[in-house]
View 1 (cartoon, rainbow, N blue to C red):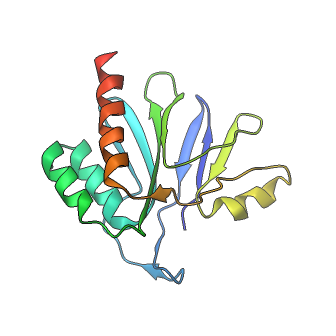
View 2: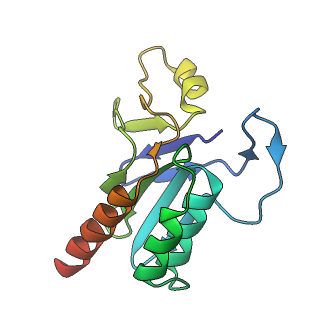
Length: 152
C-alpha cells in the first residue's frame, strides 16, 4: 500500500511501508522515493519496476539494460511515479497515475482511499498503484525524460 501526499511548492510525503499481495508488511531495503538530476521521484506499484527505475536514475543501469530487464517483468506488475521539480516544487511529470488535485493537495496510491476520508471530497487515483508495466510505456518514459532534460 502506498500513500503519497503532495502540496504544490510546499511539501511531498510518501509512506515507507512495503506490502505483499495480501497487504502484509514485507521487508524491503529500498525507499519509495529517489532524488536525481534536480527531480524528486515518488514511486508506487510493484517492487521490481520501481527497482529498475531507480537503478536507471542513479546510473547503475544503461537504457539498453533497463529495457531488456523491463521486458522480463510480469505484465501484472504495476508502476507509477510522480516527478517534482526541485526548484519550483511543481509536478513536472506523472507516470502511470492520474492525480486529481483538490485545493492544491493530491492524495494518491492505494492508501489514497484511506487518505480521502480525511476530507470527504478528496479524489484518488483510479489506478491506485499505477499502470500495468509494458515495454512500450518504459520506452515512452525514457523519451519523455530525455525531452525534459533536453529543454533544461
